Amino acid sequence: MFESARAYSILPASDLERAVRYWKDTFDLDPVMTDETGVLFEIGGSRVLVYETQFAGTAKNTAFGIDTDDLEAAMSELRSRGVEFADYDMPGLKTVDGVADLGGERSAWFTDSEGNILAIGQRT
Image (cartoon, rainbow, N blue to C red; front, side):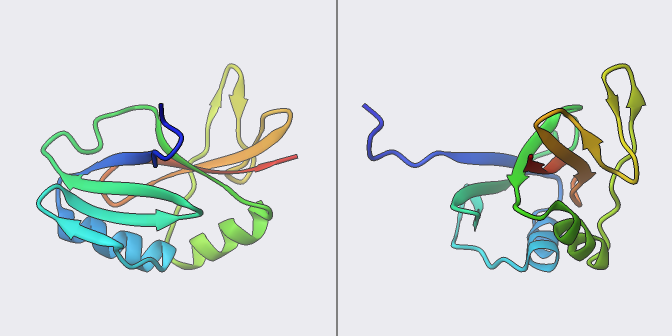
């Protein structure tokens, strides 16, 4: 049924122009498509549609994740581009310098320009 389908994530933006600048500046990405539905980016073989809505940044969960082979290098590069990683200290999740060891994966979280929570992780 879905053998030739392509899946994509959808992220809300309250200011689409700001969000496009964020994706360009933070991830060094240019849109692969722009139309009336929003702006489409491709990262790591996955697509992300960023669209304008008043509900941006209201989700309290991780909206998008990126796997990497070198978490420290990726975090260092993102920090050099202004990304600030969240620190958590709650039952079942504690970060040290922005990184949580989840037993099989190390992960870090940050928010984009629109308040969406993004994650970056490395499987161990």
